[in-house]
Length: 188
Figure (cartoon, rainbow, N blue to C red):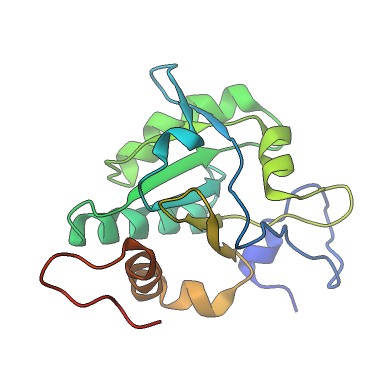
């Protein structure tokens, strides 16, 4: 039986239960991704090297993506900005519409971190996904360490991670922050 996240799959009215999500490879360099901010400035993913980055590739109209972004903001605030959350919106059919919806997405979710848009095909290539072969579900949550290496990948279909998303996200980020002065390193 398909869950709500699976029903938000792109590119097909009916999705085979054998369809799989994209697979960014933990342990490999993140690669470049260009995210255009609402100010039309370009943000390169590589420019965030030196920070732990939590990247959400999202659809602005997806309720699960909205919840994920809100959780990222909550954890970011609780952790006093210890990591860099980033949102990259795509839209399967109309990038102009996606761009226009970003300011409302930011406002209605109370986001204080960068959310921009990226080219759908570029995002799929970055994810290593081919929506013509297998459905891609959103949000796609990727955690990148300070050296620019993908450490964790959590697709929308990973129900266990998203059920307790705030705690899981906090633990994930802490794992890659390293020790802080006067505090022991988190156990792995």
